[in-house]
Image (cartoon, rainbow, N blue to C red; front, side, top):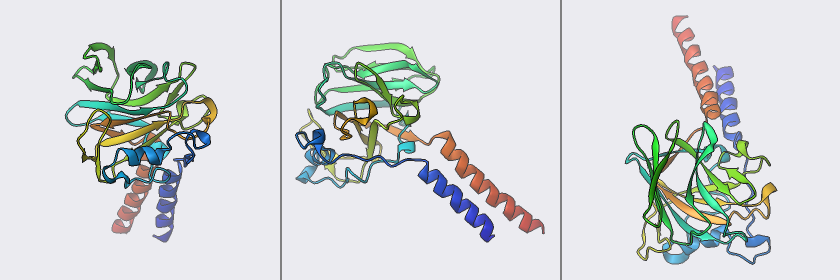
Length: 252
């Protein structure tokens, strides 16, 4: 039994360590000339101090690669801040996990703080996006309602799934709620930061740039992360081993 337990522990550790830690530069802009991620989170929080530690509370890389919509079927995204040098060409959206070329833009370079869009899938997986100009389009059809986020800097595209990035760099960090109230640009009232709401921060430069992840910061609502198949397979193998061992002991 000890050997089985040790094996399971090793599997669990391997699954946990499959998410490489992402180092976030605490100096905004690399030299302190910009707001860093902690200052941005504090800035939207009631009382000015977020319960989220920007440099340690981000989700593991493997846990923020894939996402799905919430139970209501409609999700939204709100721009908090964009301070990259090429803000006029940056864009953000979601992509079909079975075909990264099938992308739906949510924010274009024109989007500013407080811009809000909503997106939803119907039963045949046609994607509807309502943008900040109150326009809608339904010309995207995904293979499932599991998707990833992408960031396009005009010269290259980076994905929430690090394995798809040509430079092998993690270009997105995600923060889950730790409680407390927040107020996003364009919304003067403070409301609770709910469990199905996540703040995303992007690094827009190939190879990682200054690593401050403040080039575009936004909140997505009514979404949930989807564990990657590899992580689930490791866990499944571990628990299957315990089940087989338990059955053998019972039949002995």
